[in-house]
Length: 117
Image 1 (cartoon, rainbow, N blue to C red):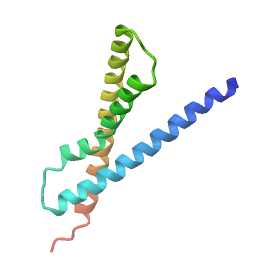
Image 2 (image 1 turned 180 degrees about the horizontal axis):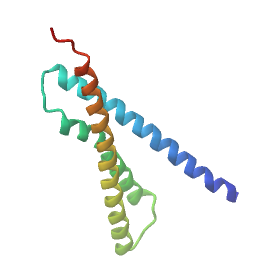
Image 3 (image 1 turned 120 degrees about the vertical axis):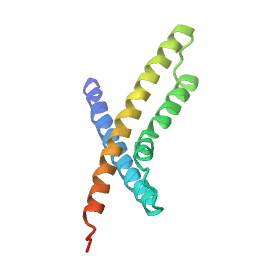
Image 4 (image 1 turned 90 degrees about the horizontal axis):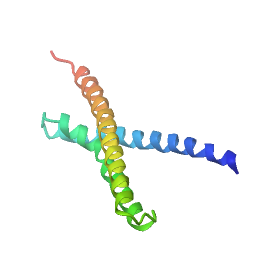
């Protein structure tokens, strides 16, 4: 069963790809909804819409710590929480940046398609 260990990397890549795809779709839809209300301040909202995935990541990590981890010492829980906060920050910045970049390209495309007389 040692060869099954390598399936975890494929599963992780697949889940990362699906999460990025969902962040991209959420960002485009939320940016479009913001622009239809004629609000020009879409930049940070696009970043936060993608970065909100990190909230679910952190909540899952906390529920894992409480219910499934089996960690008993205070130091081991502290180390787990430190690593969780580092990974949550990485997920927040990476998914937020991805959704901002996609929203930027989307806004450039839709405003580039406007014909002015």
